[in-house]
Length: 302
Image (tube, rainbow, N blue to C red; front, side):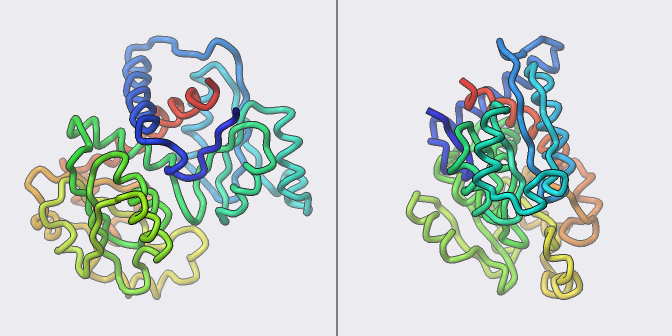
């Protein structure tokens, strides 16, 4: 039976830990120069409605290292760009490929694609969630702290798709969350309701200082996501005081580490000193997209 990973909640807690542990093993094999290709060749179709650096490169390299092949599919170069229905594209691609990854503006597009595809569909990012990023994040935290159980993760900034997936993954990974966002940018009620339903431990804070108090991990993301560039000036003003800088870091635990899913804008959501400093896990986090996605692909193809 085919599996789709459109939400981090499409994995059980056991599966999430299985993927993360496998990713750590794959990273060690890669670093040792050991071959870890799958026993047969597979093909991945990658549909990109949104531009990408890490998602595209990590999936392409990952499929190559697993002994398969990845195809970059720009909707404007496909019949999707000329009005072909998503369900028809899904049915055709299912006859050619082993699995599909889609990076879409609307979560509903990924859901429709998965509904009509007979092969696994992976959400490489949508406006609702970013499950591949969170697998890499949990892997990064586990590498640094040996376990994610009992960690306090403070998310500072725009409560976007990354924040949503972090919240929904919290009970599976065992960490608690504190979210601090300006008014109008807090997590949506439907996400908080779902977080309550799955047993997430979290608090919504009124200031970044409150959120980072005692935090093991401080996480931030760009204030101006793709699709909201027209709001840039407005957002820069409204997010004043939410920069992760040395002053804010002093409010966290002495051992606190910083994460950012990239791309970053130094001087806005994060200072250059923090991003490039000794507390940063950002580059490990970016690399771990490769290993976590390979582990996820292996699970789906098995």
